[in-house]
Length: 133
Image (cartoon, rainbow, N blue to C red; front, side):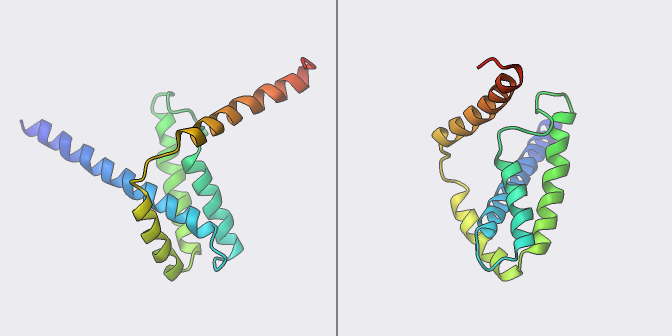
């Protein structure tokens, strides 16, 4: 019983950490769209949010160990940098809005459009390179 309880505690801790990470990433997305935020912070926040919400990773998740390592290193470092660049009062406002939205359902249509774009671009590039079209 004891190992199962510890495992459940670890899983719960990881889930809470992942939820906080999603809230922070969404808050950075909202901050990047705010006109009061400096352009450097907007650029870093937009890049981190785009990477966090993109279905395509730098290293695919199915690659053992390394697949999740990029998410565990790149995202927290990017978020930490962006958090330092965004003014505190704006960030607090964006965090509140992000926490309210984190439990909303996701758009499957938008996800399909992003995946279709990621598939179509390499095909079009390959077709242009090899004169297939």
